[in-house]
Length: 215
Image (tube, rainbow, N blue to C red; front, side, top):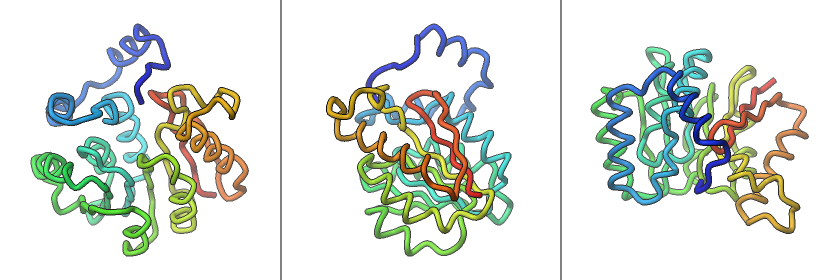
């Protein structure tokens, strides 16, 4: 995401009236912005808080995340895990492993969060179990493929959350004017809308979150 969809003064006001970031998440946010390319990809305070709320509500035993980046969203999702719960997070860029690992260890979640490096389509089938939550924040053209790989493994009542589904607002343009990524998001949103196995709500938070509940 490179553009701000909503007026900055409204975003600032909303953030001011939202529970602050923990010291650990704040430090990870700052380090990512200082050291990592495309830091705008970080989930950040507002989105991270929502992920924490949803995780607390679901109290998941098994979470799958596609797109670790520097680990911010993984740390947020992990807060609601059951005592014996696990979060599997997959990142294709091996250079990001160490920074995510650093903060996972600092959060004392190294026994709860399992990091995988490689292509998600290859790794997903190797992870056993039924998912209570799935968070997709990876390469946009493959969202539909990832959805097909995981939806039958999400338990009834479980959540699948997809990030960047508004793609800078470009999903509202005529299809011939949309970029490859925006068009992929538009088609993904339509695919979910037409799936009778789920109920969904598209939230205009940050770059758009599609929260999907398995029926």
